[in-house]
Image 1 (spheres, rainbow, N blue to C red):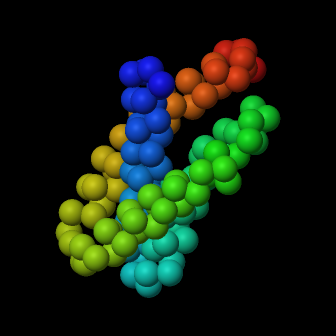
Image 2 (cartoon, rainbow, N blue to C red):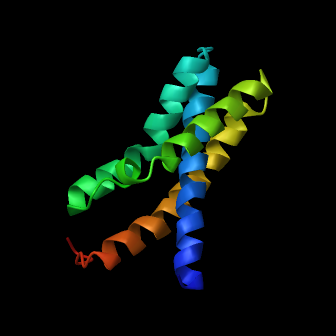
Length: 120
């Protein structure tokens, strides 16, 4: 594995964690329980990558590597354990922006590795 591939590997997990945290923060804003935190975290953590894989005809990434779901659940537990804080909305905005930036890089690299034309 090259350094670039290793960086993309860890960036992919980081992006899932960041988006999972945004899902958990959205559940926190509505005062939900830990089960809803975990559900929102999993859906937002792997949802975008799942859609990407379905659109480009690739195998869905988290089905083959369930570590992504574990990362999502860990992010949900961390957000839930921090309790009620006033900084959550600011964190939601920043984490969402970081996640979008990371997925722009990871998604582009994934599509290019599968030979998807940029204009597709």
